[in-house]
Length: 374
Image (tube, rainbow, N blue to C red; front, side, top):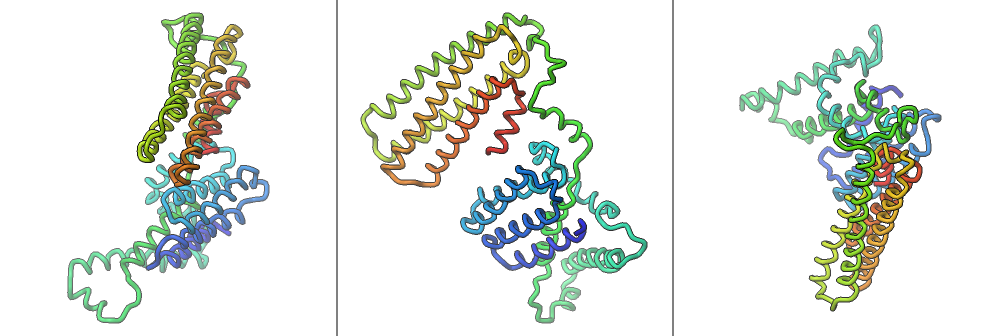
């Protein structure tokens, strides 16, 4: 099936599902149909494990939106479908470029649409070419100018409005335009050359030929920066240890609060835990971005970093226990379920950071893996 077939078929399905209809189940059906079309049009050698995992995510997300009809499910459908399409077309392109691609393709849609030779079949006058030339393009312009003239003249509009139409022309045009815009950008998205050039910056392993221990700044020598890291991690370990003690005392020793106070304090503390872990990972990314991964004298610095990661794991477990106690006493809600999700992501982030230091991976390794886990 050619690109133009997929665009027109998907647009027709979009109109059928969303014209004068509610979202909910229809978004789920549309997402499932697009996922299946993508799977069927992807060569077998392109159906890698990550590709199939994305297909499963797309199907589950479509079902989730059909059931819940909420914003998180909608974003899950959109993200998983676009990543699925990205991997079907450019499987070696880093997935982190998906978001800039959405922006650039949306902004350049009108220009790419008029490059017919890039998405319509090359022909010397076949049926498709004649249909586009004789029906589609004139139809688009007639519809646009009809709307302009109808707004400018009541009598002009009355010539066409004295009939019983079951079709709302304006609503149909809006739905058709939105559907074509989305389907065109999905099936015919473009990747600019500069993005391919930046793809190598997201490699997960260092180029061992060019790695040479050197300080981050010119005004610091390597020994001074190493000592700075030791002092930083030493002070942070002490600070975190005190925080863990006070954190657990407030949670498990102090006199129980009212449910409202308990709810507010639990969410505040969990927020503090998540921010603490994010900052912990950022600090480690700063010190282990290149040099100290291969510095033979950085053993003590790595040990301090491992201790700090271990203390952050204890912090996650403390927050997990408190949230579990909260659920047992007051029941499970979406927010409390969300706390579990973020704590799980935090734990994964800490584990990946440990692996990054142990196996001497780049910072891009963390970005890549956390993006997929998220």
